[in-house]
Image (cartoon, rainbow, N blue to C red; front, side):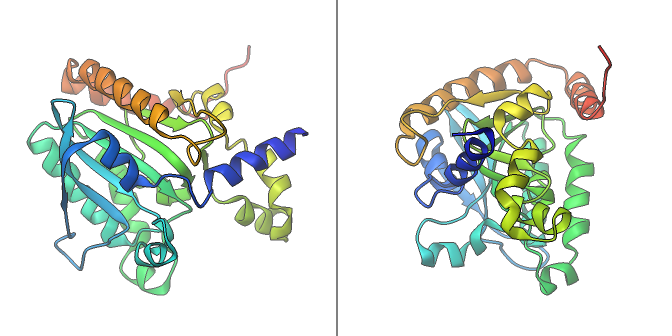
Length: 269
């Protein structure tokens, strides 16, 4: 298997129909989870499952993107593509978490924010941009975990965090390989070739210092065995949140700001 084929295999694993969704991850690592609904402006976006619960004995807020498991679920959750009200609901819960000094866990799994006419009319781009601006100054620890796909601004809208972690076979990129191929090569059929050039794998992003940690997958991927990976994630999250909670809020914000200022900076060796 050549490099291009290996990268495409990761894309296919990240999108596998049996790959656990955010709901499965929440059920496994968060106790006593209570889902909270609505953005207080328009409606509840079912795709953005958000609420409060316990990570071990630590109260946390969870904000996640749900793709759905069955065909009926996928339609209900809009295939993991949030509307603007989803991002506004997420921000409402971020502010609530800050008020009560709760760490926040973000679970990213989306091909991108929903690009429909209604979403654009209701301010999709503004909702995402507003989240980016607000998240950089939140005074509580933030960790985002890419579960499957992390696509475009749809992922970034809940992705400005102190630490970015990825599961081994997840992908994180500016847009889908199909979209990239359509723009660059004028043909979505070149998606496999595009994927190998996008540097969207967890190994690529860790080497660029864009992400901070890779959660290993076992026996071929989360669609085959997820329990061991999820257990490791839970253990590491508890440890990292404790260290982040020990920081002064000003230091937390400064470190977060500096993290994002350094992304994309080229340093000649």
